[in-house]
Length: 366
Figure 1 (tube, rainbow, N blue to C red):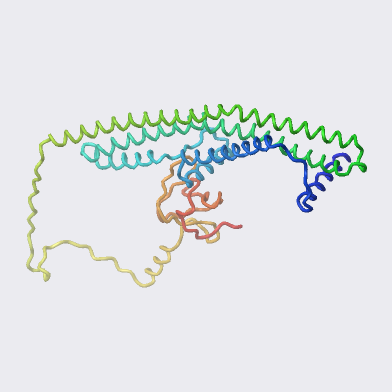
Figure 2: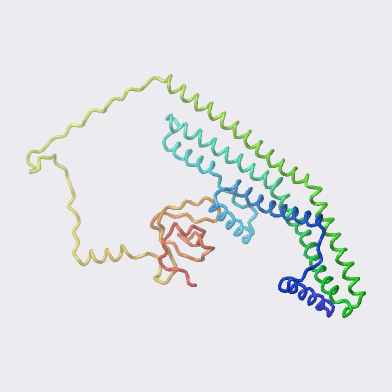
């Protein structure tokens, strides 16, 4: 920084201290300018808050949002193009219903209905994914652009204006010690920055119809989503009515019990029961029992010093990069991604898994 630049920074710092501590009064901006500044500040806050709340509306589960953010970050690190999507609640419910419907059997009334509803729920999840994409492209991204470009540029102009005001006020109060030409140049720069900031704020507020257009896109996306959701649900409702009608007209099958088996009892048994051939239980001496007990508590494949954990519950991976395991599995720990996720290895497979699904046996070194 040049000597002139250092002097200017000193002037501004001195004037700020005089105003904050000494109660000195600086140059006042007119009421119209202050009103523009207030409206731009409210606009800035509104844009930031609306973007945040819209993201929560589209993806309401904070844990899933955090998990998705972590997975997207890891995908970028690994250079993967395809990122996992947000797990829609409708899709998770649909997967559950179709799974048990097929296990129960689609030929049964309840099993077939579970599959029908499950498939419709998965279609609703796809419709919700489309809503997420539309709202992001046509509402969130334009608002983010407004925040990153226009509003940030206005903040830069206002900051520059405040710096030039402090410089001018400092020189104005020291006329005689500072040449009049410097004071005049400081005043010109102050007015120049004020005009630039005022014009940028005015243009932003005058063109706010763009934000109205973005809000209209949000409403149109929601309207399209609800239309498609209604269509899916109406088709499902017709299917379920048809199933109920078929069940009511179908003749009821009577239960026919199977004949009971006849056993030959042997009265020579002291307990009066029928004879069965049973192999005698194996006998163990105390030494072999102790040896088996030691083996049962040994963790195969892991040294005592190797970081590891034990699965408390089953974990089925839902996204690429996750490590699945069953309750009781011993997993080798290789890394801690954040406060909620570990990275580990099991049976030659590597991946991520949630911390609250395991009990750490040997912690990772700090």
